[in-house]
Image (cartoon, rainbow over all chains, first blue to last red; front, side, top):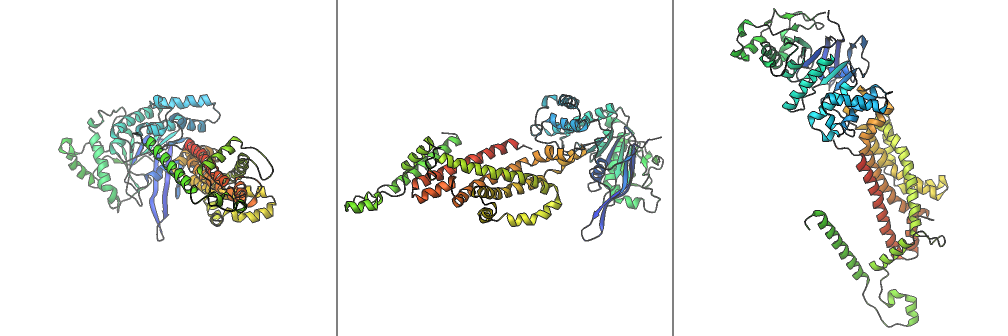
Amino acid sequence: MQDRYISIEGISRSYPAPGGGKTTVFDDLWLSMARGEFVAVIGHSGCGKTTVLNILAGLDAPSSGVVIVDGKAIEGPSLDRAVIFQSHALLPWKTALSNVAYAVSSRWPKLSRSEIEAKAMEAIRLVGLEQAAHRKPSQLSGGMKQRVGIARALSIDPKILLMDEPFSALDALTRGTLQDEVRKICIETGQTVFMITHDVDEAIYLADKIVLMTNGPGARIAEIVANPLPKARTRNDVHRHPAYYPVRNHIIDFLVSRSKSFDEEIAGKAWDPRHPPLVNPSIPEPSVAAIGKGPVTQGQGGDKPGFFPANRMRGTP
Amino acid sequence: MRSLELRSVAVSIMLLMTFLLAWHLAVTGGSSGQKMDPEYAKLMGITATQGKSAMPSPVDVGLTLWGHIKDPFYVRGTNDVGLGLQLGYSILRVAAGYLLAMAVALPLGFLIGMSPLMSRALDPFIQVLKPISPLAWMPLALYTIKDSGLSAIFVIFICSIWPMLINTAFGVANVRKEWINVARTLEVGTLRKAFTVILPAAAPTIVTGMRISIGIAWLVIVAAEMLVGGTGVGYFVWNEWNNLSITNVITAILVIGFVGMLLDQILARLGHLVTYPE
């Protein structure tokens, strides 16, 4: 039995449209996450991913529906849910260390100054920034700033880590290193993570489950892709795994075409928004036995409705 | 003479020299030495007899300035008080009015910046009160306060409050959303958030407002003291005008400019301290 550590229950978000009426960004979203699970959400801009994250963070409220974390409905921001912001959001007048210390002292207001400093330094060391601890954010590179952001989030021992495209502003090399480090830290600490990303490879490398969202307005969760790669994966060999390209192609096919036409795909069929299908695209398809033939064939295959009847299964209730 | 700084200093000195020379030439020479009846000459004074202009030369002003610097704090009767003392009175009045304005403008600016409701509710009042010349308040202040010294302080208060108030409100209202969100996700209380996130974030804007305010306050104090009289550098200027001592008037003008620059530099230094590079 999967426990529902986080349970998103029928949330929707709408705002008044210009000229009367209202625009619904997403409607009747259901998703549950187990403790220690790493979930990545992929979808095009405007599908409301960031809004979902903000609702989880308590920075935004859904128009309807509720999110339950660890048995309690979210009513506002909480120190139990740390956010890593896309733009690092460091306070520029504080040094790297005091940015982290600010979070530590918010979490444990009764600690002495030196205890706070020690805890902050511990988090700084975790992301390998002890040399730059006393520098201001303006004296740090983009990757170092994001490291401080990660250290700040980790320093408060959160129950859940929320990441809003944390690596998207970084160059490819830095991004890779940081992904490795975040993955290592999350596995070591058994962190529950909800991440938003645009990067398919990043999602496959980091996440246990990848949630595919259709285009907004009226976005919905189309599928949840179970990542077939072994938990003990490394950056160097992840793309050699036989399941890697089937998953990657499945997701890209979704982003390229199915995310637009998903409503047609499910038209006339029974659709239960509470239980989006859990898909495992790794089981080789007869038509794509040889991966070398190219992902295009496979991509077209993925477009056919009901192409994966064998491995499309219901999400656990 | 490669460096820009050296060259600019050289040009400044050259400009000053040219100006002083032109000034000197303009006030000396001219027609002079006409023979006239000694008694008539005595009546006319040196202006007519020696062709000397009533306008002092730069040397006269320099000597007078030196005299004031050597002995700034003398008191020889109500109308003969050292320039240093007069400046002291003015600076004290500016400081009192300015600090009062700060005590009102900073908290009120915070309130306006943080509350859209108060921002809208107070906006019409600010829009109407802001453009009123501070001296227009003077009669009302004299009538209600019944003390000329306090009235001058009130005038400084009312003129320096607006730039501080508006800049504080603007700075507070425009703190980056993500910094506020950081504080929110850390469950930081309102008061702590105001002091640890909003204040440092808005500080450069607030200090800019304070710098504008001190400039206006120093402009207004001279005019206010001309009206209320008694003490202060504004009164000194007016008194010397009545004495027809243009030398002292020019000296006072120079000193007013110098003190104004000093006040501005203090605020600029403060601004430099609170500015953060992003």
